[in-house]
Image (cartoon, rainbow over all chains, first blue to last red; front, side, top):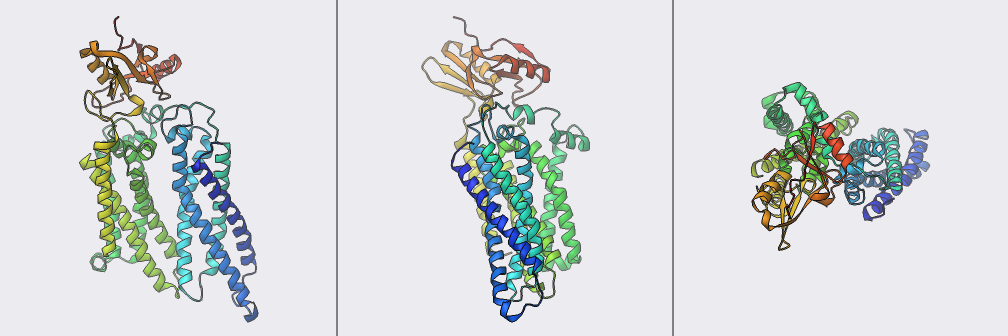
Length: 341
Length: 138
C-alpha cells in the first residue's frame, strides 16, 4: 500500500461508504419487507422516523461516494512518482490493471445512478405525502449494491497497490499506428479522418445544445412544435452517440492539439499532468452535461406521477438548464483553447 | 436563461482563457531550437561548459543545435522513453524508427536506457539502432 494523503482519504471514504452502504442495504430491505401503504396511527411516527433515517443515510452515503470518482484520479496521479517507469496515470493503471479498469468503469456508472436517485429523492421530499417513497426504496437496493461493490473495489485497490513492478510509458501504447482510437474513425472516414472527426464532434455537440435550448425556451418550443417526449428522447439518442465521438475526438484531435503534442494521444497526460491546467474542468463539464440528460430521463420515467408533476417539471427544467450550461461551457472551453493555443 | 447562467458562462470563459495563458506563457519550458513546448518524455538537455542548460523538445532539435555549437557543449542528457529517466547520452541506445515523436520536425530518433527496450522498439516500429548523435570528439 502506498501511504499518502490521497490514499488515506480514499480509504476513509471507501470504509465509511462501505459501512453506511451495508447498513443502508439491510435497513432498506427490512423497510421494504414491512412496507404498508396504510400505516396505523400509533406506528406512524416510528415508521416516518425510520424512513427519514434511511433517506438521510442514503443522501450522506451517495454524496460521499459521488465525490470518490474525481478523487480516484487525484489518487492515481499521486502514484505517478511512486511507480517505476510511470510518466502519467497510464503507467499507474498498468499495476493491477483489471482492478483499475473495473474501477474506472464502475465509478461513472455509480456517479450517474446515484445522482439520478438523489434527484428522485428531492422530488419525493418536496411533496408532504412522499408518493415516491416505495419507488425510491426499491431503487435504493441496486444502488446499494453498486455502492458496496465500488467501495470494496476501492479498498482492495488501495491495500493491494504496491509499486513493485516497472511499467512502460503511455507513448508505447497510445502512439502506435494501430491504436483503437485511430482505427475506428479511419474505418469510417478514411485515412485522413482528422477533419471529418472535428466536423462530427462540433455537429453533434451543437445539435445537442440546440435541442436542450429548444426544450428550455417556450418560444423555440412552440416554433419547433415537437412533443416533449420526442424532444427528450432525441436528446438522449444524440447524447449517447456523442459520448464515443467526444472520447475519440479527445484521443485523436483535441487532446494532442491542446497539449501541443500532435503525436501524443494519451488522455491521461491530457487530464492529469497539468499540461492543460483546465482539462479536468473541460472533461467534468462534459460528463455532468451528458449525465444530466440521463438524469432527465430517470426523472421522467420515475417521477411522472399526478402528485409530483409540478415539482418534477420544475426540476426537469433545472436539470435541462444544468445540462445546457455544462455542454455549452464545455464546447466554448474547447473552442477557446483551439483558437488561442 | 437566467442571470446566473450567463455569469457561469463568463466565469468558464475566463477560466479557459487563463488556462491557455498559463499553458502558453508560464507552465512549460520551450525548446531552445524551435520554441515548441518541451514534453518530459522526449526532453533533451544540453549542458554547456559554463554549467548552463539548454532544453530541447526532441533529439532532432538537439542535434541541429548541437552541430552548430559543439564547442560550447560539456555533455548531453537524454530521457529514456520507457522509464522517463534522464541519462547521459553516451549511456543511451538510439533507435531511428517509423514512430514520430514531434510532427513539426518529424523526429524519428528515440533514446532508451536499456538495449532490450531499444531492440523491442526497433522491432515494433520498423527501426534500426544508430550511434550517439551527440558524440563529442576529445
